[in-house]
Length: 87
Image (tube, rainbow, N blue to C red; front, side, top):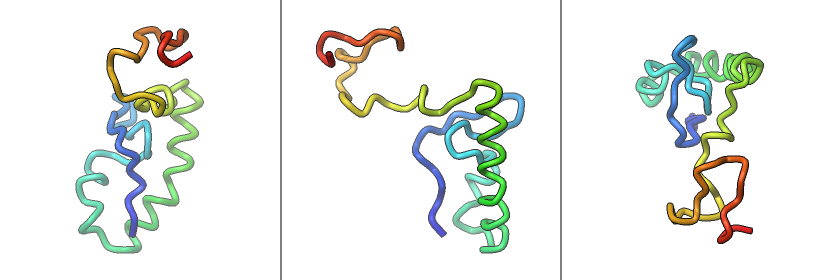
């Protein structure tokens, strides 16, 4: 079964859930070896977990790499501003 990972592996200190996919570190590490029923159970929980994180203001899209530019010189330090190169 395909992993729900989106390559933004940051975990919430309160819940232990990844803020991008909703899994715990243990679930992430064991994903490839877990039985299908276990994976289905985890996947069923992910929307609820991500909704709880979002309700606390934790949203992975704010942590995602900039899709417009991978050049660190063009990425603004302030998320509320856009650098001249991306305007």
